[in-house]
Image 1: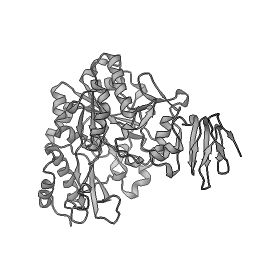
Image 2: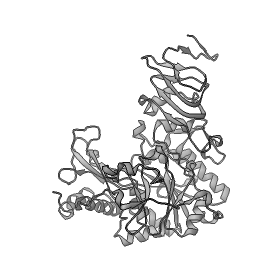
Image 3: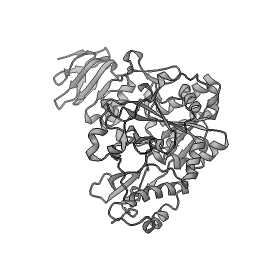
Image 4: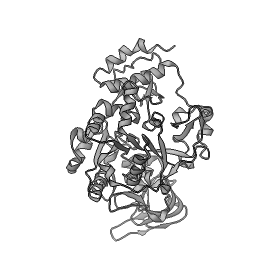
Length: 481
C-alpha cells in the first residue's frame, strides 16, 4: 500500500533542498497524483473525436509584424541525442551547408529581425547537460543575447522507488537518482528561474515554443496574428495523422465538460490501444509547436498555488537505465502540450506538414541532409517543392542507429540524391560512393560479411550489393566485377 504524501514529502523536500520552489511544487503535485492511487490513464470511453479544427490554409488573417515586439521565440534544447549516440546537445549536429541546428535557428532569427525591422526576442530552455556547449556555440551570434537573457535551465526530479514510494538511493552513481521531468517542466522552469516574471516586466505577452530539432518550426507571422486576434490563451499546432504517426499522442475532446486534451501513448490503457491508433477517429497529432499567452500562464500559476496541474505520466524504469536488474523506479513526467486542457478556451490549428520536420533518428538526419530538402534564403530547411509535402521514408539497418556509424555509411560529400525517392531501405554493411541517385522505392542489401561500396548510378529498383566489388579512385572509379 502506498504511503500518503504527508508521510514521504519530508524526505523529498530534503532531497530537493537545492531546487527552486517551483520545481518542488511541480514535483509535489506529480507525486501527490501518484500516491493518491488515481489512475494516470485516459480511457477511450472518456473521449470523443475532434472535428472542425481551423486549418492554416483557411486562415484569412492579415499578418501583422507589430505583434513581434511582444513575442518571444523559445526553443527546447535540453536533449543530448543519446538515442543517436551523442554525448552533447543534438542541436550541435551538422544539418546542411555546414550549419548545425543552432546555426540555422540563429540565422532564421537574424533574417526575421532584418525582414521585419523588429528586435525579435529569442531564448532557449537548456538542460545542465546542454547549457555550456550551447552557449559556447552561440557566442558567434552576440545579437541573440547572453546569460539569463538567452537561456534558462530545466529542472530535475527525484526518481521514486517503486517498492517504497520514497526517494530512490543509488550509491554506485547518485546522478541516477534524478531524471528529467519531461518537457512539461517548461512551465515551472520558467517560473522558478524568474524568466516568466522578467518577460512580463519587459512587456512580452506571447510565446512561440518548439523543439530545437524541428527545423520546420519557424516563426510564422500569420499564425502569430491569428493567435493574438483569436484571443485564445493557448494554441497547439497539430498535423493530419498518418499511419506513420499512429503511435504518437493525439488530440481529443473530453466528453465531460468539453475542452481539448492531449493523450499520449503512456496514458492509454492497453485495452484501448486499437482505438488510440485509429487515425480515422483521432485525426490530429501534436507537433509540439505551441503558442502561449504569458499573462494567462501567470494567472494559472496563481490559481493553482504555483503549479500547472498537468496530467502525470508514470514511466516504469530501473534506477540505472543500463542495468535492468537495478532497483525498479517510477519516473514522473509531464508533457508541455498537455497544458491545452489547463487553459479554458484553448485552440488547435492544423498546420502543413512542412512545419513538422523533427530529427529523432539517423533515418531523419539522412533525409534532412539530402536534396529532398532545400535551404531557403531565410535559412529555413524545407522539402523540395517537387515532393508535394511528402518527405522520403528512410529505414537504415540497426547498425547505423548512431550518427558516427551513419557517417561511415555516408561519408561527407556522398549523401545520395533522394529528391525522387519515396522509400529507401538499407540492409547490411555498406558505404555509399559519390553520385548515387535513388528513385521510387528501393532496398539495397548486403547479405555478406564484407563491407561493400554502392557504385555511382541511378537506382530505381531493389539492388543486392553482396557480390559487387567496386573501388572509387580519384578518377571516378569503375566496377571491377
